[in-house]
Image 1 (cartoon, rainbow, N blue to C red):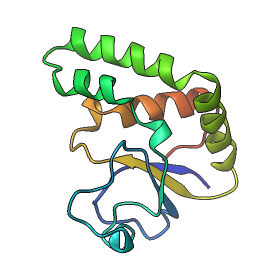
Image 2 (image 1 turned 30 degrees about the vertical axis):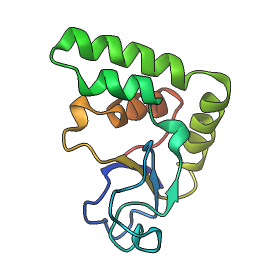
Image 3 (image 1 turned 45 degrees about the vertical axis):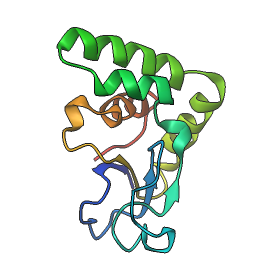
Length: 128
């Protein structure tokens, strides 16, 4: 059992399990009834996405220094009480079932899901 970290909209792996969208906004132009069938997500969990202001900062990143500043702010956001509890829950669930978390970004290295990967790993999650 484990968590897969994925790009939303990419084809699903056979054993991926439930796909959780950790994005602030649903996919544009896609009816809600088709989110899952178009490989976006089965369940939407926007609380694990950067807040709107931090998303603006992320879109303006041009350097490793900017990325490090974003990562620090996002980690602070995710370690807040409620978000931290959700991450703890996902880490625990990773030991009993397969599921995935993801975002739309093409490059995971400059996407909040890379930080989610780290945060989940730090909590003992089993990650593919």
